[in-house]
Length: 257
Image 1 (cartoon, rainbow, N blue to C red):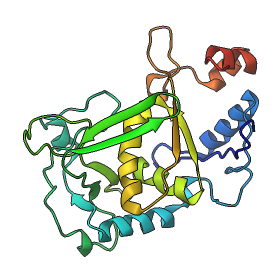
Image 2 (image 1 turned 120 degrees about the vertical axis):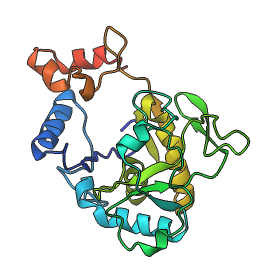
Image 3 (image 1 turned 60 degrees about the vertical axis):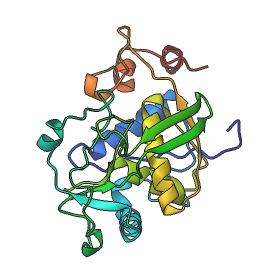
């Protein structure tokens, strides 16, 4: 590694409805073909494994209990339909809807010994400003939480999910817990997750974790300007391989230096 670091591959396969061992095997094969090599991961092990999130439930439960005991969480019984009908819409199509605060005043979280059965939200302090310096995109600033002066004013995000009612920990909680447990010092990911970083910084603060550095990459987009994503049936590495492209050509298309 140029910067003498350790590259870790983590299989973020929390959702049982969308995860399949075959997908994980294909991911590893395609990344190896592309020329990316890691020192720790689900295929090779390492000091801080397991490296598949589906096998790390105890870590997430410990964090949930700590947050619940600290008064940072509350149970939410709102359905997806309830949220879809709320007046507050997300600021972009891929982001979590801004929660209207229907269940916010619930204070009986400590009555629960397990998270299953309801959604769990992190109670964002009112008018919270989250700032961080991204190593690639510079200074970032987000304002979140309920606006005391104007309750109808939309912020960047509100109280967010940390655990789903179907007993699956949410992305925001899982990656924060894993980054701490795996001693991650620099997180590299797409610019579409900048707002997620702001949420995660609130979790890191509540849990007393060490804050890593963040490097958010510009997104790879197609000819129409849409970011490449599975939900849009975008071209995958496997598809490009099937077209006969070389690893070098794929990296060139992605703007790899």
